Structure formats: structure tokens, C-alpha cells
Image 1 (cartoon, rainbow, N blue to C red):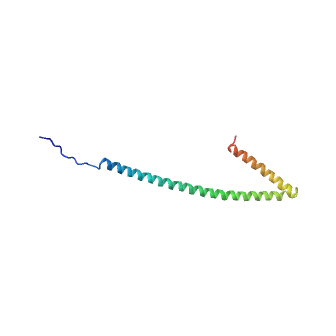
Image 2: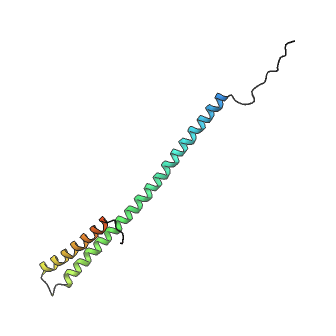
Image 3: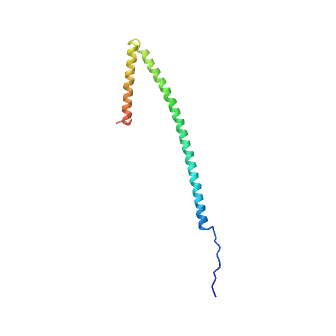
Length: 112
């Protein structure tokens, strides 16, 4: 008598179906990660742009104030020097300050 084993029905999906589902889920997770990365980078760029605009506006205000101080210095030196000498003196001071800042920045902007 030949022994026959009862046929066993598969309990779950086949290996190919399971691998296909796992691949689909991995693709979906990867797509979600890409979208999340895009959202985070957009938020970062938006914040950076907003801060940069405020820094630019602040620098413009500082420049206007600095020009006002230079104009006040030109006027304050009026009784002592001619206009040409006053402008040359302030231009020389500005050039020296600018050169010192550029040299400091070229070294890395750190204290020794």
C-alpha cells in the first residue's frame, strides 16, 4: 500500500508574493523618505533665506548709519580743516580699517 501524505495547503502567500510585497513596501518607504527630505530641505532653505533677508536689511541700516557718522565727522572737523583734507582724512581712516578687516578675515578671523 502506497502511503499517501495528505496535501498541505500553504498557510501564507508564496515566497515570490512575499518578496514582491516587501519590494513594494521598500519602494514606498524610500519614496516617503525622499518626500520628507524634500520638505525638510525646503523648510531649511526658506528659513535660511528669511534670515539672510533680515541680515541684509540690518547691514543696509548699519551702512546708512555709518555714512551718517562719516558725514557728522566731516561736519565736526569743519572749523579745523578744509573739505578736501577732511574727506581725505576720513577716506584714509576707512581704507586702513578696511585693510585691517580684510587681513584679519584672510587669516581666518580668529584671535591669536
